[in-house]
Every structure is written in structure tokens, then in C-alpha cells.
Image (cartoon, rainbow, N blue to C red; front, top):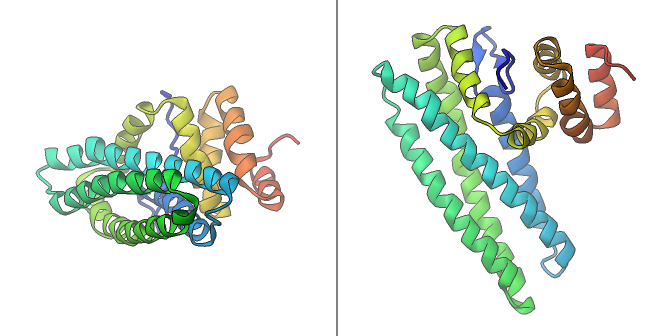
Length: 235
């Protein structure tokens, strides 16, 4: 987008620029919500399963995109400083394998005969649960081990520059999709901080589009009112 505001970063507890915080909160919440829906899904309800499969594919697309963003930006910059990211690189390779396996299970669930759908749905549920377990551990690794490597080797402005490279590579519809995932997952102060920076620095039409198509639809009425009050948004 070419403007100095962050779509994903929020300050960590030590006041350093946290490139992982908001997007990881979004991935955790969205993934856990999907896991719950997979566990309760009625495999014989074609409308429910079609909607769930669409949401699951969208989530996996965003998760795969996030992995690539980290590889091509964060890990490349750390490697240029002589810092190894072998462990998280290997975890990313495991994720890519899992994405392919999950898509195969989704297709099997879609195409199964009615009598086989519950069993196929359970296989998908268990595989996604295993993926989420790995991804939760992976994100913990990044936030407790990789983030300090960034802080030791880069200034906050340099980390912001890395993030801006990621944002600049995103088409508008993907930026909006990440916003819809992150906004309900972060707390009210983080929302006001992130969107307050956007309100200050982004073109008004872009900011309004984010409010209308990402923020308002993803929050409860009370949460949106609280945010609108904090940002002094027009009614």
C-alpha cells in the first residue's frame, strides 16, 4: 500500500515492535474456531459442510501465505545477518506438507458417499487438530525465540520495514482477509492502537474500507462501539 502503518504489529510487553503478535493471535483464534466447528459439524448437512470447507480452505490459504511471507522476508533478513532459522524453516516445510494433506482430506470429505462422510469428516478433524497442535507450538517458538533474534539484530524501524515489505506484497483482498482474521482476535487496546495508526497514516478511503469490510463485520456491536469511541469514528 505504500504507507507507513502496520497491519500486523503491536508493541510487546517490553515495548519492542512485535511483528508476530496480531497475526498470530488471528491465526490461533481462527484455527481454534474452525477446529471446534469441525468437531461439531453434521457431515450430512450439505450447506453446513460446504460453508465450513470454504472457511477452512480460506484459512489454510492465509496460513500458507503467512508462512511464505516469513520465509521470504523475516528469514531472509535474519540470514543476511548470519542468524540461522533452520528450526523454524523445517517447521514451515512440515506445514506445507500438512497443507497438502489437509486439502486431500477435504476433497475426500466432499466426494465421499453419504454413508462414508462422517468417517471422512472425523479424519479431517483429527488431522486439522494435529496441524493446530504443531502450529501453536511453532508460533510459540517464533514469539519466544525468533522475535528476540529480530530485536537483537534490528531496530524497531528496521523491523517495521520488514513488515512493510510483506504488506506491500499483498493484494488488497488478502490484506482485507488478514484484517478480518486479526481484528476479533486482539484486545481492545491493541485494536485501537493498530487502527489508530492506520487512521492517522492511511488514505481515508482505504481506512474506511477496512472499517466497513473487515472491522465492523468481524466485531460484536458492543466491541465495535468501544472501538468507535476510542477512534472517534463518525456514527
